[in-house]
Length: 418
Image (cartoon, rainbow, N blue to C red):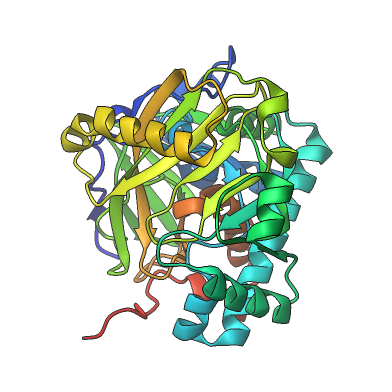
């Protein structure tokens, strides 16, 4: 393949996220080593955030030689902006996916998302990762254009697919959880975590198995002689048998599929609350509307509310909107759950990627043989990142499965009417 250039070397972590989230505590990013010579590795992972960390952990567990390459401290880009609601419910409801791809394919995607959260839970438990991981229920609330009848239809499809969940009418929802909405779907099987602590603990685990963590900027690549040569911003190159692009929402132009777009999201965290004033079971709360808000509770009892998404990726324009967006989130929180201390401790915003069908982009980069992409999107970023780590490991091992095509980078855009 001819030489290709990455188009993201000018983007920094401050372009991806502004403000401060409550993640990480007093922990610090794993130390990286400056690139001082050219070398060869088995698998080069570009990006040290949660996607790269999950890939590095799994690939080293399988015995691969792995090097993670990041030009900035690991995890402090898009991962720091995540609200880490580890849901299996997808941004595109099952009814919408069914219109795009038919029921059987869509139901299979939802079941695999549910399995991914279960797999992530097992991984955290197996290695006792210190990341405030907790299993959580989800409340999927009626909102805006999504009324009780629409939610009931969605619930019926989920039941048909064998997915967990109970439909709650207004009276039951109000009595059991206190939310003043027309209806909701209540489901088991989701989780929450501190995304920075999770990412850093996974990286440390991979490094303990021999993975390298290199500070460098990948600027281009070429496939030659059965390997990939990665150019950097210095005089050195890195040769790899395979490359995994896990650079968060900074997507190189040669990967950019037509069903992808970038946008901005906003969030705030309150001061710690009286646990007695929180909703039942500290469930993850997610509005069932196109432009939705979501709520979760941190390990130290802060309420996080996020949303107010805007189709703006320019960091300066995004940052200029932060104060107004946070004010709107603060007002929305007061309407959704009024009897709390709404003093704000953290505010932040970040750029994220989304696809027109709500599904991730995972697999071989079109036109290449050894370069894979792992990009998770929307409300399922970490869930999809876990799925990507398993899929790409299988593909590197020569075990490509038919269902991988649902996430292919070159899949058709189901919303494209042209």
